[in-house]
Length: 201
Ligand SMILES: [Zn+2]
Image (cartoon, rainbow, N blue to C red):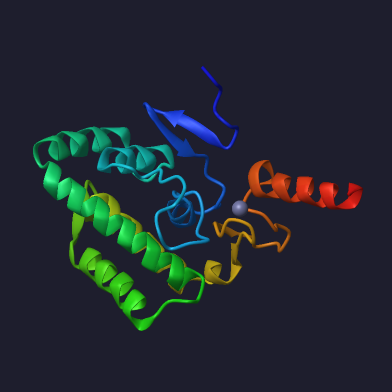
């Protein structure tokens, strides 16, 4: 068996990219191999609703118990799960455009609608004396949870630190202004090799 490249990891039978975005919303956007085109990517890591659930637990957005229960729900409602995955991938593309400042009004509205819907689905929950906003645990939970986090990122002070990898288009936070590439293991290394080849030509 060929070992996986170092930027990928096998998680519960699914290959996923290791997080490099320094923010879960940016890592969500980075779940396809490149954003140089809006068509299908060379590699799509969110290939199924189940893979999307596993990714959520991998990056710490959902507990493994929640993922287990949602997986059971998805088993009996496969067409609803497939539809939610399509919505998730559309949301990801529109969110990418909003984060990179190139969104049409239509793309922005689409992101806003999902987020407003998520906002309306929150419930105020009390456990002991602790009170918090929670989303219902149904198949929409992973998408709605991400959309609320995306809205926080878009309206917060981290937004100005979002950078785009010049090679693959992935996004990452760069508060100190020191990063150029999404990852030295992939794009940074390829650039080094290209520069070396140009020097020795
Ligand atoms: Zn890159």
